[in-house]
Image (cartoon, rainbow, N blue to C red; front, side, top):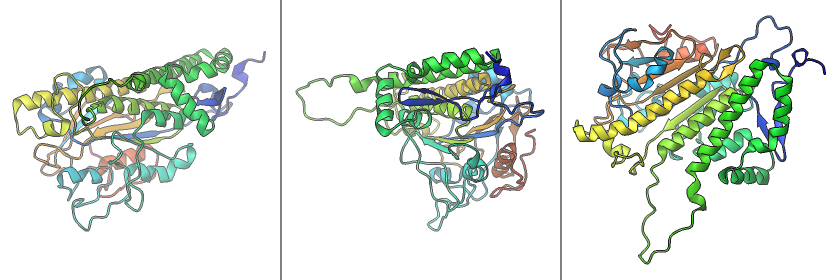
Length: 421
């Protein structure tokens, strides 16, 4: 057989099976033949946490590269050199408590004003420029259907996908509506889309080089692990309802926002790896219901208004630690996802942040920001004076330049962020 190294794979190669088709990650075999220099795709992922983080547990006491990790950053110590923690930033003329979330990715001033009109968010600005290069110009996820952090050029909020299983089907399952629904049902029953494409996957493994085989194996393993996570979180669907002789009561609180967040984060990673899109936003809203995490015992919103009550802060930290643990797992998975000589994290500007610096007092200053990837020199606490900081939108200029867009301003941002190199 002709050596595979002399053949090329089309960029849109799919693994096909009975009624389904699965997108592939970028493989070396997809590079143009004899290309002297291949520019790998750049990506952006922005995550907004509605209720912010408790700053004393997040921000280190020291600035610079020699900072001592805070209690929260201890959770991310394995990836210390892969992210930068930023403090002190805010948006000019955005001091509007919960309403500040509308301006997090846009920088539009006075979001609680009756005359407020939002502007385009950084993800949609990027999608307008590079979205034509992928199947989906951008993806927008949220843990709550009532909330979105992505806005088009007219300042209109774009609807967000909230269902990991529907997002998975949309991205990775090709077929008729009935075939897609059948595949979702199979996943919920513990079956795998990989069962339907196993034959072609085996053939492809035999035709590509060892580096591509490892990438393919990692990717397919990630797909199966995500299927299993979705199946576990939806097991309740198949359980019979108990018969009780009492009056009807309200639905029990599922309290599974953190599970939904983790699944959507993993769907995002797989979509970026498969180059289905290069722009993703994800909004973690938190729940007004009591979560399932042991020890939390109160809803996220309730705990965020802790009023410096030490017991509430302790319970709040349980929720925020779980969220940061998911972020750490995401960083690790991105770093281990090979992408034609580099890794997915290096090619992605990934940011986790909040539009309030203190949810208890509704302060919109000193916003928490964790920037990972993007081939920056990480490992530092980049601390700005919260009384006179540069605009947060300078960070969005960095994000757009990472995507190789020729811009030097965005909204209130008029340069890149000093110190992020």
